[in-house]
Image 1: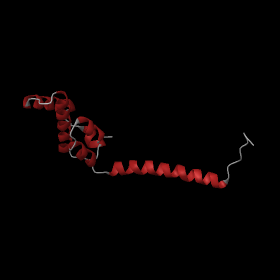
Image 2 (image 1 turned 45 degrees about the horizontal axis):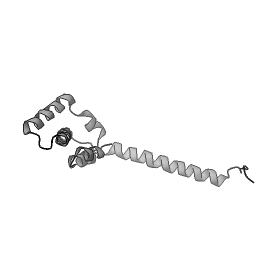
Image 3 (image 1 turned 135 degrees about the horizontal axis):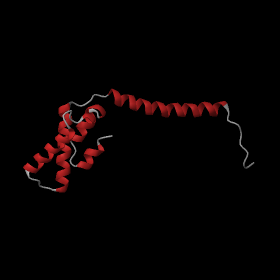
Image 4 (image 1 turned 90 degrees about the vertical axis):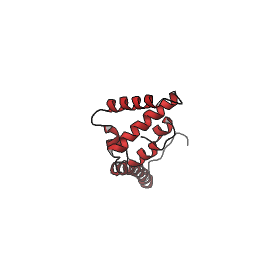
Length: 114
């Protein structure tokens, strides 16, 4: 009969609950593993910032002068401030930074980061 629904059985409720708990477990487990992952050093974060600046500059100017690269890196470090690239050290993992440092262009570098 169209439009007639049957009440959920105990098996239906338990199956739904199991699926919901599995999804929550996967999401919470991934977040927990990310929180426990090793964090990058301040030096690795500084290298990441330099690499990003260089890749962005090379995207705009394929053969930038060494002085231009150095100037842009200095500006980026000054913008990061005395405390360095704090978000990097607090939010990224060593694996993400390692991936980003090996990127061949700015887009690939950004794909390594959350």
